[in-house]
Structure formats: structure tokens, C-alpha cells
Length: 298
Ligand SMILES: Cc1cc2nc3c(=O)[nH]c(=O)nc-3n(C[C@H](O)[C@H](O)[C@H](O)COP(=O)(O)OP(=O)(O)OC[C@H]3O[C@@H](n4cnc5c(N)ncnc54)[C@H](O)[C@@H]3O)c2cc1C
Image 1 (cartoon, rainbow, N blue to C red):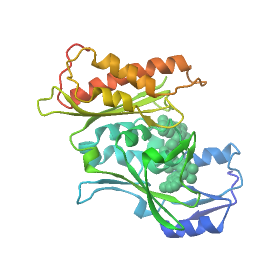
Image 2 (image 1 turned 90 degrees about the vertical axis):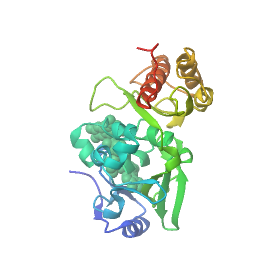
Image 3 (image 1 turned 45 degrees about the vertical axis):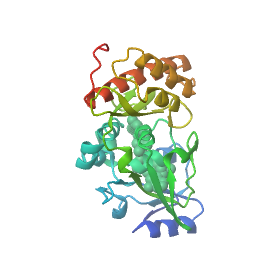
Image 4 (image 1 turned 135 degrees about the vertical axis):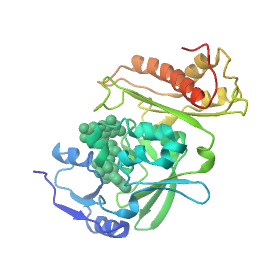
């Protein structure tokens, strides 16, 4: 039995907001794979749950006329991974979604829940940060758009207010077009494992495929919140892919941007090593996917 005061099935977003406003001690539940564990552990015991699980306006993925890709917050990881628009344009996000938990979790857990729980370990967070996604929130005062770089305020904390519902993520065309990416999750097991570290890279090469036109790199669990390594990005822009100093310096710069810490999963020193190694491997894989050749790295 779960210790909750009520479970309300919202009809739509406005109905969910109304119920949240009426009940101060209530929270949103979507797939429930975080919330129900918190309830069972006693952390959220006695809360009322406003379910958006069956709200159809929050589900699905579409390509808008201006080329933006819009991902409904209620879309499950299974649907993100298997969606044609995502697979064709942002393969690294499809892959990141496919690393979450195991098959049962991915059938029910949502991308909205993954971002709104505020966890730095959330597997889709680093890729959405690299993609510079906009987050569309709706609350009692109406709708607002927050860029993902301004969304996280600390471990498990975001700017989202209790009665605000995350409706969708919007990825502008210029942030994915001609980019090729790779998501690297390090964990001790291959499934049912929270990331010890996650790294997502997106790279755009010039037409000759020998020079990096632009690169974005974002980590999870390398800092209190999912974050970009801007000095690594600035360093790599304009560099030739066959420059033998590229990978080591890129990795060193990425490390200088991060603030890893000790946890029961891994020491700070081990995470520092992962930050560098994962930067190199993710950049190499992204460059190769983009059609570039790096022959000196095996
Ligand atoms: C066995 C197991 C393995 C797991 N493995 C992984 C893993 O490998 N990687 C990983 O990243 N996570 C993992 N998780 C955590 C969890 O599955 C994910 O964070 C998932 O994305 C949560 O989505 P949900 O829809 O179940 O969220 P819920 O549990 O329903 O909600 C999570 C939080 O977000 C809020 N919320 C949800 N949707 C919205 C919305 N649309 N608007 C506003 N607030 C919202 C809720 O109020 C709550 O605070 C695992 C969980 C379990 C139980």
C-alpha cells in the first residue's frame, strides 16, 4: 500500500493545475518511477498525487514548420528512442533515453519526469543541455519558457514551481541540424544503473569533414547540475580533426569546467578520470558519425 492522501487523474493540463492549486500538499505524478519510490520510502508520504499519466496533450513528438522538434513531457523513453524524428535528427537523445533503467522502466517513465526531478544523473539531461532545449512550463499564471541552462538551481532543484506543469521541450533547428552526437553513460552495470557519469557531445564539421565548425559537450554527475563544458567547446572550435593535441587538450579543458565530487558510487578522482576519458571517446565517436576521420585514435 502507498501512503497517499488521494490520487487524481487529470483530464488535461489546466485541470491538473487547478487540482494542484486547490491542494497545497499535492504533487504531479507522471510515470511515477521516482514519485512512487519517494512515497514508499516515506519522503513524500501522505501527499496527494495529481496524475498527468493519461493527459494526451503532453505526449508525442513533432516537427514544427520552422524545423523545431517538440517533445511532449509525457513521452516515455521507449517512445523517444523509437521515434523516427528523433532517430533521424538527434540520435544521441534516442540512445540516451535507451540507457535509462530497464525495458519496464522505459515503457512508463517519461522525459518530463527525468528533467523535472532535477537530478544531475538524469540520462536525458546532458543531451538536452547540449541541445540548448527550451522548456515550456504552464502554471496558474500562464505559460513561460525557460532555457534548460537556467532550469537547474542545485541538486534536485529547479526553477519550476509546484503548480507548474512541464508541457514540452523545444529544440530549435539550428541546435541540431548538421550536428552528430554521442551519449556515453558510465555505470558499473549495463542496465538498471544510475550513471556514475554521463557525457553528451554534439559536433558539426565543415563540408570537407576535416575541421570542427562547432561542438557542444555536456555532462551529468560531473557537477551538482547537468552542465556544459564551455572552455572545451571554445578550444575545439576551428580545430582540425587530425590535430593530435585535440583530444587531450579538449579533455583537460572539460575537466577544468566541472566540479565532480565523492559519492558512494565513485570517488572524485575516479570521476575526474572519467570526465577526461569520456570527453575524448564521445568526441571521437561524434566526429566519426559526422563523417570525419581520426586515424590516430583507436
Ligand atoms: C528501477 C529504476 C531504475 C531507474 N534507472 C534510471 C536510469 O538509469 N537513468 C535515469 O535517468 N533515471 C532512472 N530512474 C529514475 C526515473 O525512472 C527517471 O527519472 C524517470 O524519467 C522519471 O520519470 P517519471 O515519468 O516516472 O516521473 P515521476 O516519478 O512521475 O516524476 C518525477 C518528478 O518529476 C515531476 N514531474 C513529472 N512529470 C512532470 C511534468 N510533466 N511537469 C512537471 N513536473 C513533472 C514529479 O512531480 C516528480 O517530482 C530509475 C528509476 C527506477 C525505479
